[in-house]
Length: 199
Image 1: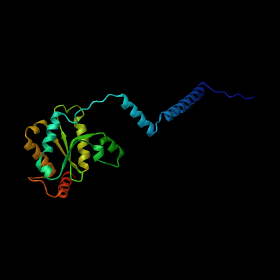
Image 2: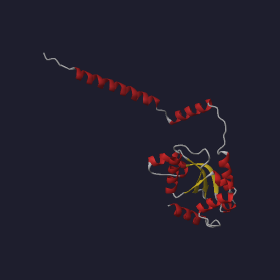
Image 3: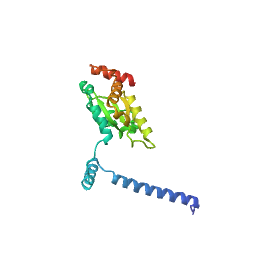
Image 4: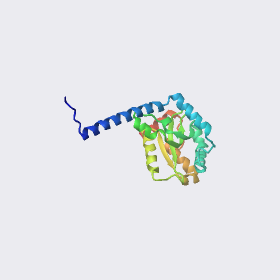
């Protein structure tokens, strides 16, 4: 009669394999249980919203809103049929087949965005306010600027000193829109000019 001799190392390997299999099976079962359907996930979010208190807050701070109003009331922009929106999400105005590249911009916003008559983005405006800077501000701005420029959307940074002279502020906006003195009459010419400048 032959006996199977198993040394301590073999026993340890067998035990490790058995434990790993058991843990893996249990973890897989737990993950499957925890994986929610889309409907269950939405219901869970709704329950959380029901429990949470909410208060309204301003979309922009006072300084940003001052700049927004100067641009919004510009006669030249109105005459050209352009529109100004605030806090535009980059994930809604940019697209990319590169998944990781798109994820890098998807959750980010631009302070102000000028749209043409058809709703296409023309010029992104980032207001660098007094409390804007931290260790990653420059990097985050570089991410936005690079993606927007690649898409043919103009990019302009404005600073607190710019709002002290509305005429100068608007001249900077007009220059980025490709208007030397007066806005172009043809919106398609304007779009083509901006795309050419930023391509």
